[in-house]
Image (cartoon, rainbow, N blue to C red; front, side, top):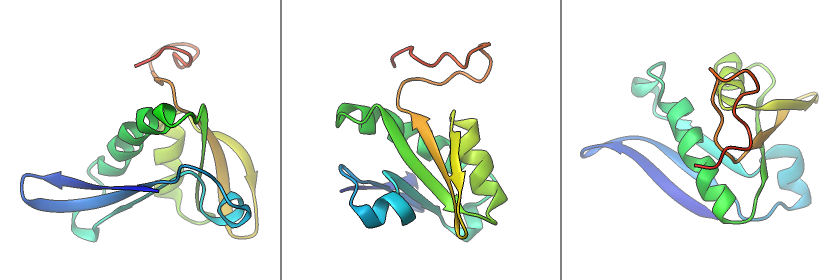
Amino acid sequence: MTTLWWVDGERFLGRLAIRHRLTPALEQFGGHIGYDVRPSARRRGHATAMLAAALPIARSLGISEALVMCDRTNIASQRVIEANGGQSLDVTEQKRRYWVPTTRFDPYHPDGGVGVRL
């Protein structure tokens, strides 16, 4: 796993976890990429930017589509994943699971620009 901090100068804003391989448990409850934003920095676009920054790193690890998930009731995280091109895989009792392409996603392009490399 690669762990990265998201900072603004000296100020810690959040953390990213990029898991290089999935275990059976991660397939159900973790996924390839996880992110956390400190409460005082939420609702400012950091999570969306963090996930976008993690995708090319995942691609460099040979992951063409990243499994990304959020708690079923976490609407903000659902929006973050979908803003980065996430396509719903399923909704379990606890989680919403998505496949997110690790190629560049452009929300202004008719097909999302998926397949365009960074």
